[in-house]
Each structure stands twice: as structure tokens, then as C-alpha cells.
Image 1 (cartoon, rainbow, N blue to C red):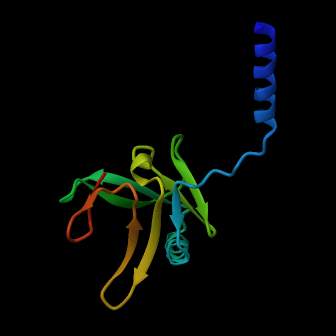
Image 2: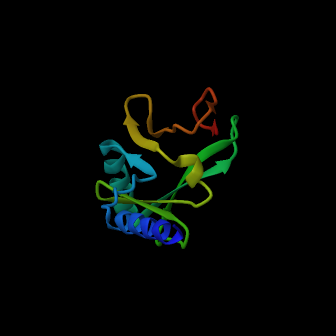
Image 3: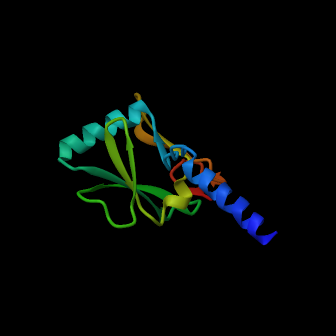
Length: 131
């Protein structure tokens, strides 16, 4: 009895190990407009990465931060999309999972816009959010 159970378990583990793995979905999605603007900014500054994070501030509690980076730190999450590379700070990762980053440029504004499924609320001006 025990032997047959162990044998069945070993077969199940072997079958799972052979199964093709689905590619992991990236933590952040970039639109074509966002990727083009990021590429332009990185080329202008001769930087390799743009680093995305969140800070505690604003009306709703947290706001997005964008900085240039020369290297990937040990626990940064790397997102590669449309020829650009973005690093996500480890402390921000849980707040940003599934977020889409876009870039809007019109007569009134020129800004990155984040569509974050984790956000439970946002201030009126759109600068900060809460999860």
C-alpha cells in the first residue's frame, strides 16, 4: 500500500517536471508610447535602466517614483519590453504587480500614466494612490 502510494507520487512529480512551463507574466506592462518615451529619456541621459518605485507621500498615501539607474541591484525586478529595461524596487513590487504604464502627451500634459489594479483609491489630482 505504502509502496504503491509512493510510486504514484513519484510518477506525478516526474510528469510535472516534464510538463512545459508557461512563461511568467511580467510584473509591469508597457504600452508602445511609454516604451518610446522611456527609450528617448534613457538615450538622452546615456543610462541603461529606468527605476520604478513607490514612496509614502501624497494625499492618498503612496506615489510613483522614476529614477535613472546604471546597474541592477540584487533584489530589483527586471522588466524588458519593447527594447527598454525597467527596474522595479523590491519594496514597490507588491504594489505594482499587474500595472500598465502608458505615456500621454497632448496640449495640457506630458506624463506617464499608471493603471494599477492594486490601487483601492486615488487622490483627485491623480498623483497618489492607496492599496
